[in-house]
Length: 111
Length: 114
Image 1 (tube, chains in turn red, green):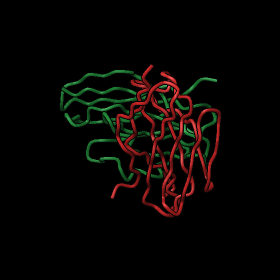
Image 2 (image 1 turned 180 degrees about the vertical axis):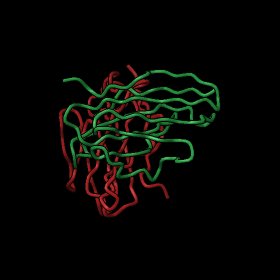
Image 3 (image 1 turned 90 degrees about the vertical axis):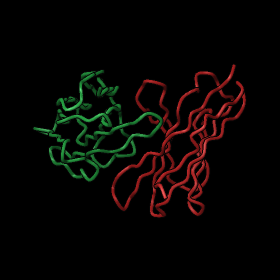
Image 4 (image 1 turned 30 degrees about the vertical axis):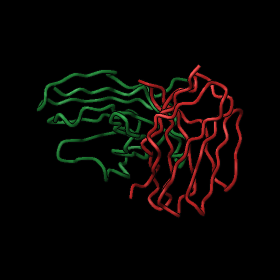
């Protein structure tokens, strides 16, 4: 079982819709969870992080964490074409003191 | 404030040739990471430095890859000899000590081995 799993996509949503990106992880001891955005040909940039169960909102982005289900999600409201990118889920494997990235989900927002 | 600097941005070499990548982290960032990213995959950690000490190199293919971070600032990643499967983007990132949750990535070096 891979440590961090994501649907590879591509996920296509119309402009203005809600995009939902999902991530599961295998290490129950993980404490911190991150979402990075990576535009084609560019390097990853951190957009959200979450530590506690529940929701964390930042503008149009909401991160959701359910540690019992080992599940993290990212919701993007009012999706814009500029949101088209690959979204990488990353998990802090506390027991190994390292951050592991998932394979990423490609999102395409159609005007 | 300058971001993470990497060079070169692109490199094309023939297999069996050596290649080196250079990284200058954000000023004050003690932790430096080298990642390899294959097409359609997330970054895979190769080595992590805390100052000049390599604290995690478990994923570094030591038969052909080497890295150094002299004086705890700039770092160099070397491959010798390169193989076709080494074609990837090599990313350098840095963070404050203990702040792996907030890594800043450089633009990467795209390596093509022919």
